[in-house]
Image (cartoon, rainbow, N blue to C red):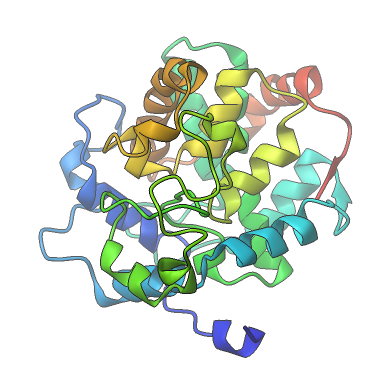
Length: 291
């Protein structure tokens, strides 16, 4: 399929899909500090047309072949090499001035996530996971369309679950009618484990591969599957899971509310926090990361 067919950019900003998540997945966790959770991007009306268009494109073009192509391209990590702090400067080009909950840059949002995790006394590797979990959005700065960077994730190579948001849009996906991919198991084996399953392409999968040698297994599951709502919210794809996935599920569920509800208009005090985070990054990560 030609790249020209991928040119539509339906979302006005990178956070619109997260706005839709908050509408669809309200959570009573007392993590929000600025206001009640129900006040965070809580839209009573149906999902906006831009969100629907986002998922129409996502579900149409996230094919098995597309995912293999992106994995081959980006998992070489040959685009850039940067320190973590230079990478955050790079990521901060994605400042979203239209976000209704915050006008902070990407690093400040990630600091709010990690600080909420730290405030609740979780291990330091989880604090670092909160700091790094959106690093994969640098894909947008390498020319990727939003539908190939953010949004709910799902397995490719097997039948699509009706628990995925807007499942009707998969009817336009070539894999939907491909006999190799449209059965319950598709190219996989019963209870093969998610680690043997190829997920739709996006920032979750990318940052997982970027950091897979540096964080504990629960943190890696948080990175890789925090947008796999059909699994950790709806209980879909149980037939692909193994016992290890079921054990890790509690960690993914623990992480998500910190990402969704930690935004606040109060910017973190970076001058005060910097020594802690510089030490934390140095403890777990190399001097530079490859992108």
